[in-house]
Image 1 (cartoon, rainbow, N blue to C red):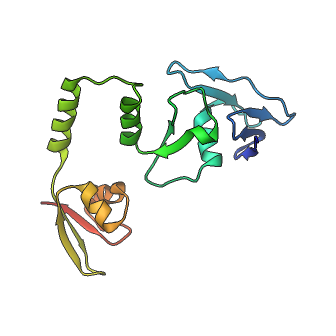
Image 2: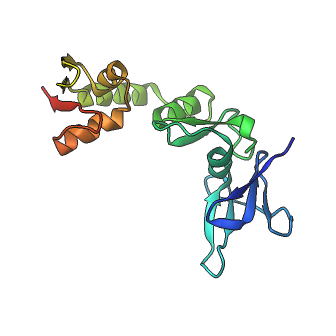
Length: 176
C-alpha cells in the first residue's frame, strides 16, 4: 500500500513509499533522470528558486530510520529507478561501493583491487584511545577497530584526532 508523507520545508509536496511525489492538488509530478541515471524532482517553496532532490534520498529520509554512521542510500536490486522503500537501505560509502561490485553494477580489475588494498594498508595507522572517566587506555591497529571496541562512529574518533581534543564521548585519541 502506498503511504504519503509531507516534505519538511516544502509543505505543498508529499513523497510516497513507492517513490512518487505529488503536489498539493494531489497530482503525481513528473520526475526527470539525471546523467548518473537517478530520478530527481524539482520543488519550489513559495517564491523560492526551484531546488532539485534525488527521489531515493527523499524516500529514505521519510520512510527509513536514519542510521548516524550511514549517509548513503543503496538500491538493493541495483535498479536506480526502483525507489520503493523496500528496495532502499542506509549504507556507508564503502558498503555502497562493495554492493556495486558484488552486484556487477561496477566492474573492478585485479589491479584496482590490489591498489585499494595497498591504499587501505597505507592509511591504517595505530592509535591510542584514552578515557579517564571509565579508566580505559588502549592501543588499536586502526580507527575502525577502536570504534567497534568503544561502540561509536569512526567519524567521532577521526574528529577527535583532527581536533586533538576529547570527543563528546570523553575519548582522547592520538596516533602512535
